[in-house]
Amino acid sequence: MEKEKLLDIKDLSVTYKTEDGIVYAVNNLNLEIGPKETLGFVGETGAGKTTTALTIMGLLPSPLGKVTSGEIIFDGRNMLTISDKERRGILGEEISMIFQDPMTSLNPSMKVGDQIVEMIRLHKNINKKDAFEEACGLLEMVGIRRERANDYPHQFSGGMKQRVVIAIALACRPKMIIADEPTTALDVTIQAQVMSLIKELKEKLGTSMILITHDLGIVAEICDKVAIMYAGQVVEYAGVEKIYNNPCHPYTKGLFNSIPKLDSEDEWLEEIHGLPPEPTEKIEGCSFSPRCPNCMEICKHKKPDITFVDGEHYTRCFLYEKQHEEVADGE
Image (cartoon, one colour):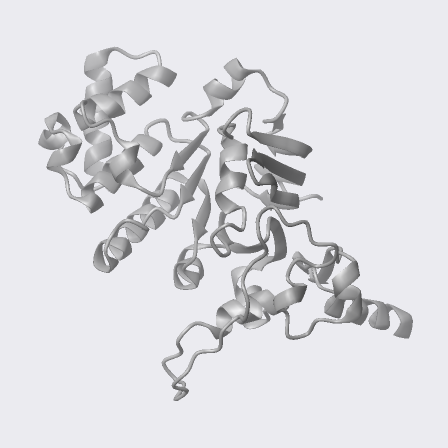
């Protein structure tokens, strides 16, 4: 029996048209997430994580951003082919997004309670008084006193603003939340509080989540699965335990080796040498080959396909493709 999928992305490719040429933001991306699952989406800046999220939401800047191939199936519907009216009905009600910067996510001229009411009434047939009561309940759920519904965004700290943004995202009890580095603009102690709140509310409401982040510690604590993204492509995908105990792709290993370890006496952290490819550069072989310590000749001229290492754990690397073939030959 095939596992139930809430979101299934198949061979998605996205480009941007710029003055410098075509930017290949996402390349043949495959991804899936089940009901109540949390997927950690990890990679360097420019890897294509936010572009993927915006494409799911139908928020790609037009006409510069363009989906050149693939499907995004959310709860049985292809988000790339449905009507604008149907998509608007899904956004906010079934899929919500928490953006990076709470300072720019809120309308400075509206009271925060009214902003939550606006979201509720957009998707529910409910009068203003009942919607306001519901908004106050949402504020209390995220740890803000209901009296503060009549305050404006500038009267809140950065951490409190992000809590308001979370309340708006949860207003219609969506099936899935996309959190795009939701703690980037906050200081470290507030980051921990906000991530703890997101985890608690996700479990309480039974919501699926895609968490875009650079922080592998947060991924280990909150996520069920991890997708490691590099140059617009998922290079490794697995359950959290499998990817932390057995990272396969050289890029994944590089990310883990660059994390400080409390039980290590090494003074220097290992680094991933070099820089990611330019967004407009189309590399003939594996995108990571110019930086890879295990680069072989084939890596420079051919793109690796997906190789399953163990169950759902897959990677895009010729090292494992070769091992897989050797095992098959020996059987």
